Image (cartoon, rainbow over the protein chains, first blue to last red):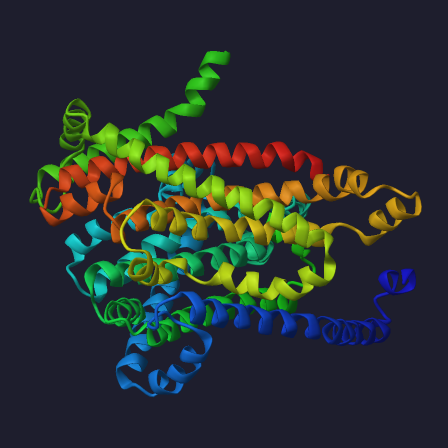
Length: 277
Length: 251
């Protein structure tokens, strides 16, 4: 064990141990997970059948609704526009948030001028702005996009600026002793060092973006998954509506897994505990 | 010397705040009142609404809802998380489902809650609870995972009683993580509060925003947002303080 950590020339045993470990762990955790899943679904089905009115969503009903809903062109289009808007909004937030975050993290002046605004906006539950954004942008997709950006940009700014501030001082001092130009310092040191924070911010931003998109659709009644859920549940098609919730959940989980995976894959030097902090 | 330091430190913030207010004022005065009203007009609305009592009543309404849901989330989330931390097989089994629920945008469940539970206080508390409980649960479990198995083994080999094990190992190690969850839950519960007030029975500051925006009364919308912003910033600070207080244990 000690040998491996000291000599970088012996990567083979390490990778072997790595690939064996999760496989063993997975087989140990799969059974309890499956059993719990079956129990949860069973309880849900039983309680709804015994106690709730017939329209309430239950696993068997949802399972039957899935093929119908997933082939419904209206639903597919709704999923498409919502996800497109979320991704578009996240992309805008990403660029805007990284630029502003680096600025606040690396420049004292920008920090003092902007930090209180950023923290203030970050603390506001962003859904309050949706009625106002709907007034400004009209009851259109533009209002949804604006909501997504507004909901997600501040978590990226906050995390990127934290990351840019947390660059180890030694790195910067070495760069200075070698007279590295500031452009190189930014690209080669600050940016990589703040990537884990950036990813943590992105994870938070994605969750907020989804909420923002759904709330915007609820209020403006423009087509999308949120509106699909609202409409179907109003006409008491709860099983059909729940398929929409499942897809939103899948998107949320998928994004979470993608961020976790890329942290492990591209930033193996970063420990997980620090990311949740 | 010291006073000059204080001025030098705070001057940029005060200046930027003043600049922001001036920009708001100028843009507000030059646009249609349905679109945006100026800062001074917003303050005037805050004052009017405070005088006729509606702002205070609505704020108390909203805070009651927030506290009910949040306290419930804490009372359910933290003990459940700790229990799951101790009973490993149960934790392993239920962990992925909690992760899924944590990542699911809970707003999507509001239409179901509306048609099953109707209008009233209880469904709204449920919404705030659902927004707040999963960050607490998720982070508590994360904390439980961070306990080194050796610690529990050592405690066991010294024949530690179950109670002592909880008191000296489980709770001290998971609590800092729970507090991270609490901070996140405060923010999420606020979102839950507003969305519940938007889409379930309309009350509180959420109703104020919705009602005013439908009447193009932008001044009242901004007044309510201003109050929510103050509450949000205050609660966020409070959450960060609790988190830092407990984070000292982590190291």
